[in-house]
Amino acid sequence: MRTIGARGESQTASRPDLFRQLFVAEPRNSPAIPAVRRLERGEHSFTQFLTKNLSASLAEHFHHGLLDLMLRASLGLVCLALPAAARPLASPPTPSSPAPASSPGVAQADPDFEGQAQAAEDARVAGRLDEAATLYRKALDARPSWTEGWWYLGTILYSLERFEEARDAFRRVVGAKPEDGAAWAFKGLCEFELRSYDRALSDLQRSQLLGLPNKEVHHVAVYHLGILLTRYEQFEASLEHLAGLARQGNESTSIVEALGLSVLRLPFLPQELPPRKREMVLMAGRATNHWANARRPAAQRGFEELILRYPEEKNVHYAFGVFLLKEDPDAALEEF
Image 1 (cartoon, rainbow, N blue to C red):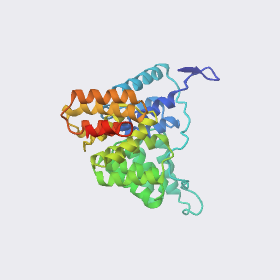
Image 2 (cartoon, rainbow, N blue to C red):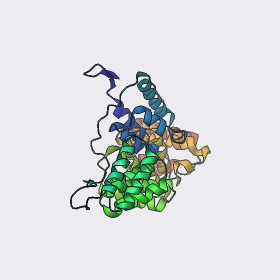
Image 3 (cartoon, rainbow, N blue to C red):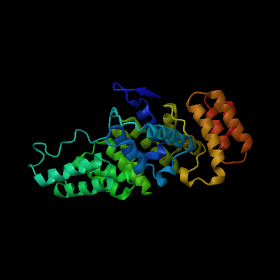
Image 4 (cartoon, helix red, strand yellow):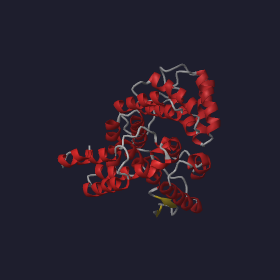
């Protein structure tokens, strides 16, 4: 895991991949996206990342396996006092070709605005997020057409879990750049956190149509789209999206649970699931995950065990029948 850099300093070659797992392995951790991205670009030290983003409220949503990964990475890096070596992601979700604040043709030079924009940028890079949000607002008061500023304000507020304010900032971005799929995705994620599920579903569907070249944002957006489709009883569509994530190597507890809800046709979000049904849903999800990854013998065993344990539960036999339909239609009909 550790390598020695050209000047002899210890570095962690795999750190960016570890932190991508905060939202690739567990898409529920979407508030971590802007923070991790700042860490990867070198805009935060690792200590700043921990103190500002590993809050109790965020940690509550980490599943045990991912939290263990996070803590192991954290312990090693803090003890070694490693520098925040970083490399950018291949396709960072920033507004398409944003014009710098001082670009010719955008607006006349305004020293006051330029100073506020630079101060906001400095605070953002230093990880002083509350201060940065205040400074971005001042700059945007002076120049409301500054789309890049609305983007950064939105991502900062999203990282701070101030979702209503973040949603309003992303509204300004999509108003100026309606083709920006990442902005629609973040707006949809804000709407989801605000429980505006109709708008969240619409925004996330639009983001998929426009395209999300960034892998991490794509995973988080598709996960939330999938669980919303389940809630709205669009089970075939939700299963297609969620199975796609599973086929991409994402077999986390979040995905397994979401697959179980979808295949059992239970119109709940994961947080709405009655506790007494959770083990049944996880069993169905594990079988469906095997199915999505073409592990048919394991999937069949999983569905058979599910039926043995929950023979009277609604849609358990239906789910097994759907699984059997292509390979053994006669057996499938007996389950319907």
